[in-house]
Length: 151
Length: 151
Image (cartoon, rainbow over all chains, first blue to last red; front, side, top):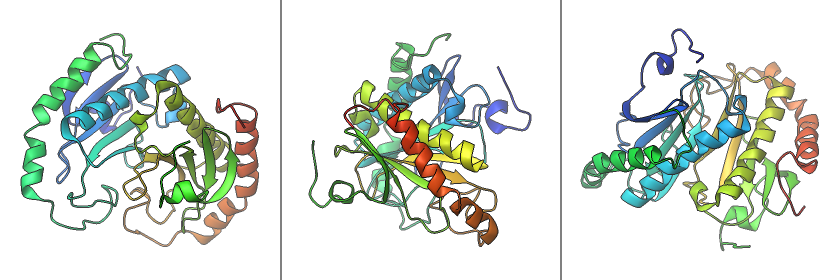
């Protein structure tokens, strides 16, 4: 397993750990304004998606889809956002974020300037479902939906 | 083929057409400050990545990887950014963007506030390679690297 000194995703989970196997882990990030902000983090320190073999790319995207589908089922967001940027932390991680028309930056990206104060009641309603959502994601990945081996 | 009235990605190519087949097309967007900004657009009007079958997800990600690898080979960027947001245009499209330390927003996202004026000479050097880059992407996808059928 290749690790890089000083890389925050090599040196720590990077958020609240939802699921972990040999190839990847799923964390829930603590991003203000976006409670349903998950990341699928490749365990090995690779920078680019195309650094992975086709089989490994399929594993990580399957995991992202498990997260995406669980978000859609539990939270009914207006949109899912997927992104692998890694400019600040060049260790492959997929952001999987539930977006709502009422959130503080919609329809702009989560990295764009704030457009409004998010609706507090709606935000709370999302937060109230996160524990069940984490459990569903973990359960599905544990059952093999993410094609992850070597738990 | 499902099309949606008023959707800019159903009603037009959405940029300079680099390659097109039955399942997807690749366009080069005209985004100021980011000359190597490509999009892999799913031809059918679907909103979410997880709306695709596993086979179709593999097709679109293979195409994104062909674009990513060509960008890396021809441009040697500091990072590739991949994203499927679709908040403004909920028609599945993958952004594939070459990022550089000198670009106007690095290490922030291309949607984040501008941090600096991009280096003009470096920008021009990227622009000078775009025609050859388009040709390489098209050639590889035409040769089947993107697993696209029904040209």
